[in-house]
Amino acid sequence: MLRIAKLSKRFGDKVAVDAVSLDIPKGQMVGIIGRSGAGKSTLLRMINRLAEPTSGAMSWDGQDVTALKGQPLRDWRQRSAMIFQQFNLVGRIDVLTNVMLGRLNHMGHARSLLKLWSSTDRAIALSALEQFDIASLAAQRADTLSGGQQQRVAIARALVQEPDLILADEPIASLDPRNTRIVMDALQRINRDFGITVLCNLHSLDTARAYCDRLVGMAQGRLVFDGRPETLTNDTARELYGLEAGEAMDTSGTAMPAVVAVQARPVSAAA
Image (cartoon, rainbow, N blue to C red):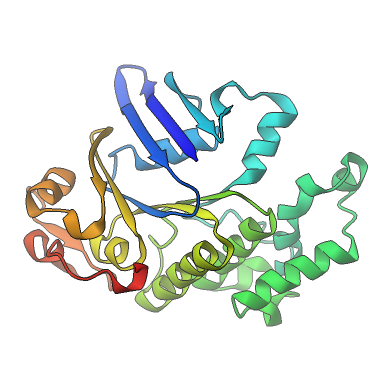
């Protein structure tokens, strides 16, 4: 279980995350929702220790994550794989090598420095690419791929890390509707088939409802909702997204009234 206890992050006078507490059992797919600037990305980066908490604590299966340093911290980052909005691939090298970079922490120090990939590493990376229907792109430079293809490569790289936890920070923000479905299907399959816990920052309520079995809502750095998607009320959605814009975004990227976007419906995709 991931346990977050009164976790906060300040940047000068600004409070980005304000005393958030959460317990996330293994195997859940959790959507973290809210407006831009709500603290969603900062929360994920603190979980991975890319950002240091100002106060509070985190633990995984009783291990104090906030106290980790050196190799134990590197091991934690291997176990809590990050997927970023902008993919973070090395554009000038091929797809297969990008995926194998996720294996570095499984290699000895000398081999990792020289990037001496074993046949096992290559087989694992190719298998991951096959799962996302992009094995045919293995020899292609990463910067020649479409956005959706690059994000699938990034997910494959995260999977070969053999993580306990995947932290996806707005993984569909720059994608079209078709690639949005492909990427979210891939994350859901990882969650269901491998039992890997997935925390996914999402702006779209429709997408969050369709794919996640639990929603965590943040506003101004605070936790304002935590529950099943069907229990999210219109009043809470207004608190999350505000009324000045008066709209939320559906999975096609089309603006729709907020009161319509938050109508409860069966969560068949997450059942």
